[in-house]
Image (cartoon, rainbow, N blue to C red; front, side, top):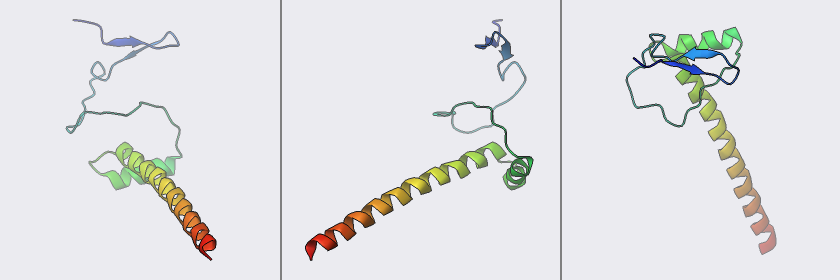
Length: 93
């Protein structure tokens, strides 16, 4: 059987999730995601764990971050459109 350990850039080895006995939840394959390590305030993590139930709190955190990014893009777009329209109105006078 092939080794399931991977060598990290710092010389240490880490076991793959399969080797650690972890099982992926059913659902579509993970695409366009990056594994990171992040330190969050404990109350934040507990909040998302309470909301998540069986769903997975990390998924909820990801969705909250996605909504924040999407909202910023929408706000930038709306500002640009309003500026353009106000400019057109001023130029039309």
